[in-house]
Image (cartoon, rainbow, N blue to C red; front, side, top):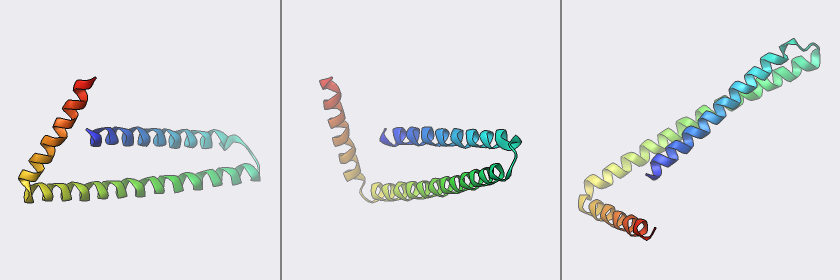
Length: 104
């Protein structure tokens, strides 16, 4: 459940960031009719920062994916090596959630 809400939060963050990128690209295109060296310089700076943000987002996405895969592999390995302990832990967590849910 926690991983599901973390995934949802990550999806929301990614969607918001992608919307920001699209809006910035639109702003950049809308300022294309401005003339002058300062406008060209400003558009160049915006374009450069936007590309840096895209690169950073891609690196972050790959890093998060790699760490998630590593954690998943570790969890699977632990469960395979210690199945009864994993069942006990899951039962304990289920009991705690059940107790907390019954209080509401």
